[in-house]
Amino acid sequence: MALSPAPARPPPQGDDALLAALRAGDEEAFASFVDAHHGLLVRLARRFVPSDGAAEDVAQDTWAAFVSGLDGFQGRSSLRTWISGIAIRIARRRAVRERRYEPLPDDDPPLPSEDAFYPSGHRWGGFWRVYPQAWPVSPESAAISGEIVRRLEVIVAALPLAQQDVLILRDVEGFRGVEVGELLGIDEGHVRVLLHRARTRVRAELQTFFDERGRP
Amino acid sequence: MKVESHVSCQEFIGRVTDYLEGEVAESERPLLEQHLLICEGCRTYVQGMECTTVIARELRSDAGQASAPGPAAKARALAAFRAARRNPKGEP
Image (cartoon, rainbow over all chains, first blue to last red; front, side):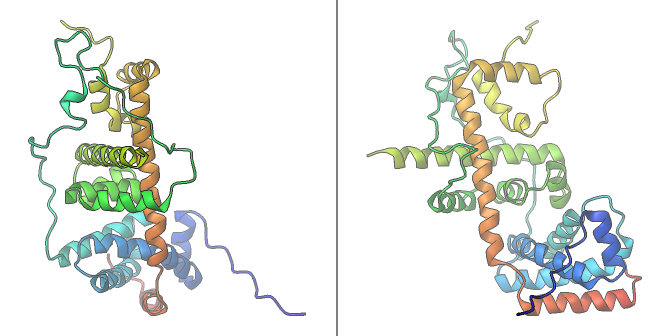
């Protein structure tokens, strides 16, 4: 009878247990943490540095800073947010083009455009002239095709950089709004304004995509 | 003085991200929810916004597969971990 390998010990659950294991020098726990987060660090870094190789270097430097900072970690954020912040700071220092989060200009035209609604003064002022079209996918439907995801990639890449960063940290990577603000060094209200503009633009572009696709 | 007893579609759409993020004042929430109950157009719009965030999550799973650590990257991280644990006094 062939011997099956011993089942791997499950990694410690929760930040407190994980932090204790890492501080005790538990290499298995660290290796699992690297497996789970290295990709995230590379993705975050790649938003700021100009090549995949540079992003890998940032991730490596992030691990070095993470392990040497473990004992000083105060637990004010999750380990995931903390290490993401380290990666973004290192990547920004290396960035060819520093991203600045200036106050938003007022000339960004609102979406949906004003003429989607009856004008003020009309008895239906501020209400839809024509209702938006329902989409062929719903939030609950598991089947979101690769074609839609590819389209979304293109749409996101065309957003202003500050909007991209916020949308990716909040909606793609799943950080909370307050964490996104900490990671980017902007206040939470500004995060929501950027997120609103980004999601509104993306929704409008996807609407166009579905409308065009739906035509015979 | 104008008493706000309802919001228009345009006002609702302007607040939709704060609404979905759970960041509207308790005093405002009933107005927005009431609007959503009666307005099919805004319900459709909200569903599109929710779909947008669901589809965005798919970008993460796509990217994750491509960027698991290679053996060399993992070995270097582990070496840094061992070195730091031998001398656990560093600062971030």
